[in-house]
Image 1: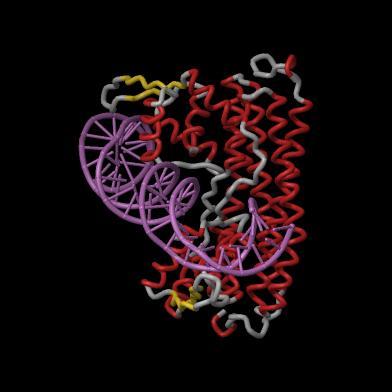
Image 2 (image 1 turned 90 degrees about the vertical axis):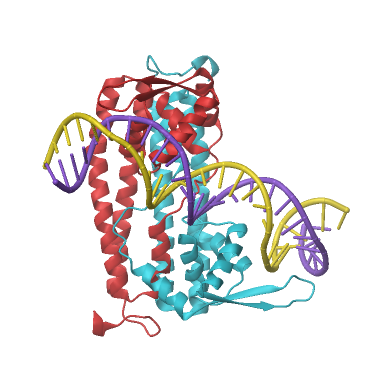
Length: 195
Length: 195
DNA sequence: CAAGGCATGTAAATCGTTACATGATTTA
DNA sequence: TAAATCATGTAACGATTTACATGCCTTG
């Protein structure tokens, strides 16, 4: 279960609550991994039962109790074992945007272009975000933690996110141009009377 | 449910059996969508119950009966409605490779590089595949079907696959170089006595 | 003669999302 | 005063994977 390793991976960097783990996920891994709180809380309980983390309840006034989780040595072993399993296969990815575009030939040309422009806006925003907020965050974390090796990997993964968003925007721009130059063809579903 | 739309998307191009749909998935959408037969068969039954496809059993000698599914007009409407829903959000992606690399700072440097080299081989193979087999397949299909608009989209999506594999390989090469040039730092887990 | 392709499925287990439930504090 | 943040969870449902079950034909 990759969620388990995600949680262990974060906890390997210091104790955290489920709520904080959710925030960490949203702020750093959101473009390649995500999870809901309703999945995180039971997962942490199970990890505790299995002895991979320990939970310590900390009472608070005005707010619900916090449950702070720490990784155990068994947990760290398990994490390192997973990290060492050879990454010799392509990641199994599901991308609804690509799926939709793959079948989008059934739509009128103008509609396909409209859809691609929507996605282009989303990808441009993502590119900006990865270049600005995420970059700033990585540098802050690196300075705070002083953990050299992890910080290098965070920055490299951030750079991948940037390269990916760049590739996505460029491809969309190219694809839109290709369709715009494409003449209306017999057999397609384009309807110029409604465009 | 995206699997439903995947099946409708393929069936919109002509009748097929569950087994053939699985092959079609493996040959064309594998890099952004996949499914097992044990998920496809029940999904087709449900689609038939819902009136989005019709199934026709065709006896065969020596082989088990075939069940050939065709899309209905209701099914086509449903597909087009889905294709038209605005693609204004980023695809929610899970990428185990990125996840592992994000946490890989806990490993010795030499080990991280070893892992990245494994993945580089996989990505280089994928790049070749998309440039060769997949490209050939798209052209064959386009010629057979004579469906101009779908063929354009298939080729565009194939080009995206190529661009993605290209981005992946380049990033891995860059990341490996970065780590190789990185001096051994106090606090990391590198162990030169075993490198 | 073993392995793989053709062709269909069911059952069990796991993984993940959405909705529901609670309740104080802070911000707009 | 409405919405967001902090903080925890459960329940129901839906999606996906893995294992099991069958059996003939073709290829190596």
